[in-house]
Image (tube, rainbow, N blue to C red):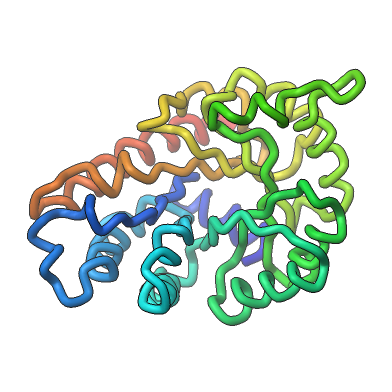
Length: 269
């Protein structure tokens, strides 16, 4: 998906919502657990209920990899079920020496046909560049994450600046706003204004709204740019909105709340 296609979907749906399909068999409604294809059926119903309210879906690959070959099959079928106008994210956090990163990129961009994959930048340029060499595909590089452990490295000073600032400045020169995004946790919303000074034009993937306590209002206030420039991910708050047979309807209701709020912020651009 191109940057302009993504922006068009945001404008069309008045939404920058990304729904996380981090599907855990033990958390899906009990009535579905006896289904022969339980996780895929759950994903299908969530997608059907939310597809007109969101512009992206993020699949955390760990929840599928743990199931072995069947999990990879479920993940591939889920990606194929998502409508093509949606931006798809493989939340795999890959990053290795160049030839290995190339194989990871091919796995998610060609075999699985995701639009993007999350990438850890720790090993440097040659570990990230392979993900930037595919037309209309994106690398989403970890910038400032929302977990408590981000203070161990990301928020340590390197000379006069924080390590995450060095990452943003350096990595942004390896690609462009049409093939490179950054992960910035919603729980760091107060830092977003400073981050926007470093990378004013790039899209940011923002997890942490909902169960992790991030504020959509603050993320939007400090993170939006003229093209929107945000994909705000909500996973558990949407997909586990109900443990009963009405789970899809309840997921839609929560997604609608997000979309309605987002429409208000977009109207001010």
